[in-house]
Image (cartoon, rainbow, N blue to C red; front, top):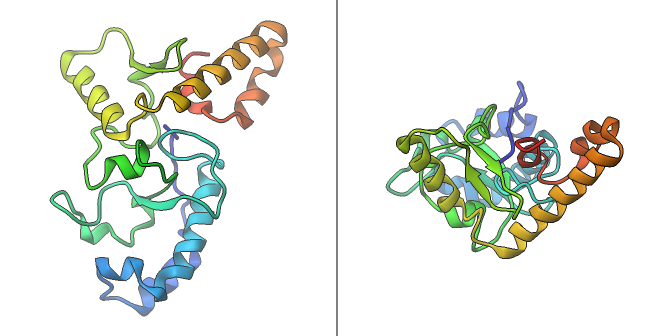
Length: 196
């Protein structure tokens, strides 16, 4: 998961929209008036996330995917007051088995942010597993987060992580001084860092 750190100053178009529409409601998020703002927010989030999906860390173009509400804007777990809060946004891929589409209106036990990867690690088979020594409660939180996002459910995603792990281990063995540079540009780099 991307250890997301939002920029200090949100997208100017978002700030302008909020100022012009102080009573904006959840329904306005999908309105024509907000469409251009959403595109600008998505581009900024993509930059903040290093071009990766916030959840699975697959490469993601600034114009693809969706603006994801980390805490859902609606539903039983809705936080409508955070609908237009930049700090509640993330850029997520659109895949029915994983990430924001799989999460739906659920509340994640572990959200993307600094330190979010401290309780799990990437295994050699490409799956994400809880680290050793966690309490049963922590293991349940890790398991629920991974299940809600489907991070081990898509075999293509698991295989891709495994391939990149092999590449990272080869760099580490053949040119250890280059591993930092490798990790700066590799997809799945936050998960790879849990191993390296």
